[in-house]
Length: 362
Image 1 (cartoon, rainbow, N blue to C red):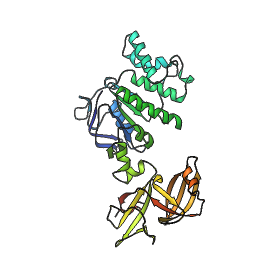
Image 2 (tube, rainbow, N blue to C red):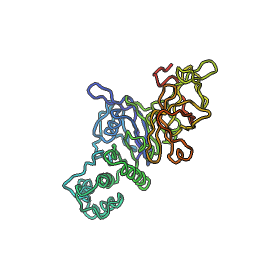
Image 3 (cartoon, rainbow, N blue to C red):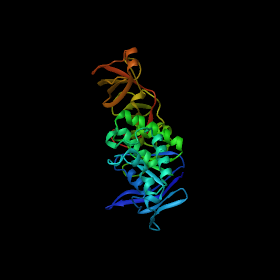
Image 4 (cartoon, helix red, strand yellow):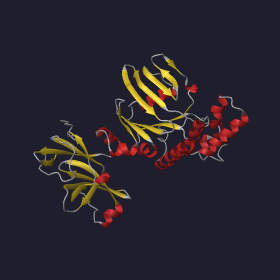
């Protein structure tokens, strides 16, 4: 297996800088996820690692081998980098059986027929396609086709597996199933994985570490999923890792108020000291009550979603989301209707400098 070192990599297309002096190291045997919005350059970085593109600046190493260097204008071809890659659109050949699709890289490498069959059937078993090796892709579900693509990437025993949004075309249940299977395979095989996605749920579920990229291609934060989720470096990271609520808080002497209103702030004490700060929190951090202490709110929308009830609440002119378990709402008389008053308390708050809601940072 191998670690990956990206040192000062830059890439420009038609005068537009996609990546600028980006540096990153992926450890041997870990599942590392690049998480960011569409167009931020994460797929470009993966293509540079794979060898489909060459960097305009910097270098890329896999293990002890430099595979691309702008300074020397040298780049190792993709087929010599010992990589496996799975794309969003499966890219399985419709006229080939499951077996032939998976075996194709071994055929190109002119592997002995007996070894080819053994390794291909092992890959078939790894992804749970036993008994389906004679079928054509048209006879498979979307999830099974994605397993074919994954087995084909693994059959060559790559030192690095690149996964580019491989679960996007699957339905929600299959996405959940496949993300757990990919993680289980990574643990079993010990292969280094670089996973590219804009889906924060997948990133949090499968990653040993993840990097959050912004729309300019800059790395905002790198760390373990729990670390990044619970201690975001800034409000961009906080927003990108799930539904984010923000309440502006104004400091007037020793008193705190919500935004420009006369409603006092009632909640966790801020660890920021500016005149304008922002409380960030998740829908699951919101605790509701019909009276008592807390921030005064008005229910704008109430949506029953089965296991939970989703509320949109107006607090002093700012809208926030709250998500409560349905059984808790029933047990505690918290099934509100639109227009009702409520009291809002917050279990956890992340504090940010400036008024993020209005964009006033100072």
